Image 1 (cartoon, rainbow, N blue to C red):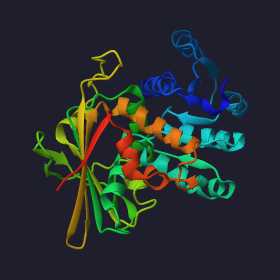
Image 2 (image 1 turned 90 degrees about the horizontal axis):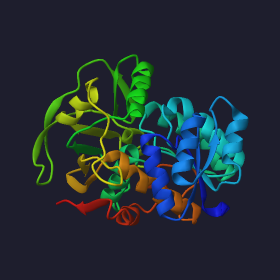
Image 3 (image 1 turned 45 degrees about the vertical axis):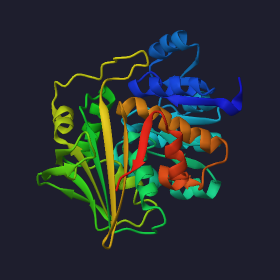
Image 4 (image 1 turned 180 degrees about the horizontal axis):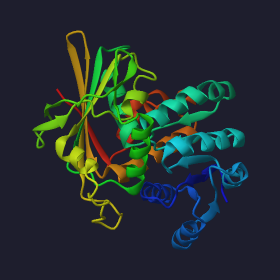
Length: 342
């Protein structure tokens, strides 16, 4: 086994994990399949030819065995409130980089708070939220800022045609709501605020052909953790198209359904980013298909860059801090189309 190209995937048999395993194999990596369900791992190993290493976050020795001899670990297993800490600890013991695809706001904040000092001191690279939510918005915001060293505010509007959540998304959302006591969260004046009022509904002018659409304002995603972790932006607000917000809230919305051989759904997305400083404004927009599927090229591109010495910082770092944002976004083609917007 080529150790330098061997990557453990914790939660390999989950919806996003399967996309990540396939993308690793496509790019010449050797995936090691890990997670707590030995039967699912064994079935996936027969299907993909990969090596199965069962592990549980409650069993330190099993995690160490799962990561032994690997070059890095990608954590795809939610809820990340339960899995991120133990898997980061295992990665630090193994001396390998850690990346995850967490969208949970509090779990990502915990990773920065808990591991920043240790990871920096040991020269480790820990990249949380290297996914559609948290990662892509951070890269777009960083690229849009360009030579600005600070901005007054950043706005990230998600134009999703629909949102059919996976079982993991539903579980992670439930854990987050419990941690917040049912309150909603926003990032304003440089800090997270927890509120009990209803978020505003407003209109957002997406680029064509989507156009003007109703959105839920302060529909807060992981970008409020990743962007302020390295950019001086005191107000970060995210928005979600009303249709997608209704989908994710409805208990009977079905899981994503594959419509092609790669397993992608027919969901499309536009991410429209606006940063403002004084009277000036800069924008960037990204388009693509299937927020779960597109997470795979995001996190695997990040892994490739970390392992080839192209990470710009050590410690707990977000996508925009760790990588050359414009170059990274160009590398995502043809998965994501990125363009400036006047």
